[in-house]
Image (cartoon, rainbow, N blue to C red):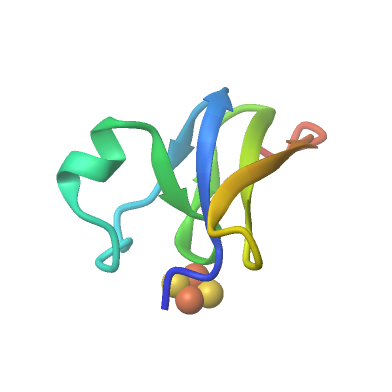
Length: 66
Ligand code: FES
């Protein structure tokens, strides 16, 4: 559905099962959080559903679990 799509601004994420996003978009830094596994702390840009654009930036801390 891609409602969890984000653009990675910093950090690393593994997403071996992200079938809903093309390899090209992955190379551009896009990821699906529902099937992503952080390999480090992340800073991601989220999608504003009303605007249809990437908007707020969130920091996701893996707190030593990655
Ligand atoms: S692709 Fe639908 S919630 Fe992630």
